[in-house]
Amino acid sequence: ITNNVTQTQHVEQRNMSITTMNAPMEQVRAIVGEDAFATNSSNSTLSPLKIFVFTLTKPSGNEARKIQREVCRPLYDRHGIKHMFAVGKPSYDSRPPDAHTQGQLATQEEIRVSQELLRESEQYGDILVTPNRDYYRDINEKLLSSLRYAVDQGFDFILKTDDEYYVDIDVVKELIRERQGNSQDDIYMGINRFNGDEYENMKGSDGTIAPFMSGWIIGLTRNLASTIVGEGWVHSMLVAPYGTSSDDANLGKWVDWATRKYNMTVQHLVDQRMKIDVIPIQEPEAKENVTMAMEETEKVSCGNHDAPTCADCPQGNGEGWCHGDCVW
Image 1 (spheres, rainbow, N blue to C red):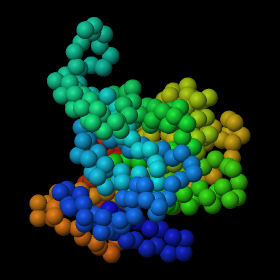
Image 2 (tube, rainbow, N blue to C red; image 1 turned 180 degrees about the horizontal axis):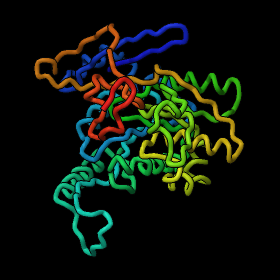
Image 3 (cartoon, helix red, strand yellow; image 1 turned 180 degrees about the vertical axis):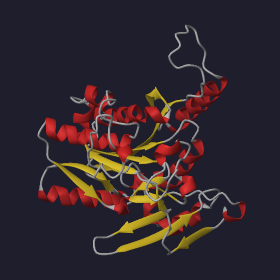
């Protein structure tokens, strides 16, 4: 696990790598702390709020989900937090998407992955399937459907994260307490905030811009999320005129729209301590080791996200994901 800590006056980065690939659980406990695994002990810190964490994963991401369950789930359990994986419908099809073909069967890969997901869901009960094909271009629907599920289930605070990360709930609680000590404003929370005009690809088709939190970890109060997926459902779904394919930038636009449309007061809270990286180490000789490194990790800015090198920026998405420190 890698924990990046940013404080107001200075930056201190502490990187702790836990090899979760066959690493003995005793070693993980030794580093994270035994109390983190004490689900029902007197040391457990249960949140008075109903908090929901959903992790975006791809249908075939069973290895990432396994790591999340082994390393992150006990930490969420410590706080009495519901954690699920948001997955779109398996989609491995090169046929024209607009073809009107009755009785068309799924591809063999779609069938195989769907069967694996069904078995995984029956075993763990933590798979949230959203009603969209799991393509990046449809990630907005994946986010909105997950938010709608959380609202319908009555959760007070909703956190979204990618499957590389764990959310430090202690930091989230601290931020919520500080906000609640001052007012009952809604919250839009993240680890990094863009103004929305840093790069051209942040702008919508009509030039719309809005501040937004980078997509690694994002948190919303229920009232704010409810407005986006309730009264604002049609506006949020019909994102083409003002948005892009980037769900994090669009969420910022939805928050801005809700703020103006319904005269809401929303506090933007930013704290990098929330993000803890979950790093599976692939080298065979490293699988049995648990190492701690007290050194800063060098990364490049790709625009909306960071990566180890410029070559890692696109992640299969092409030129649109190569900005910041890098050029295509």
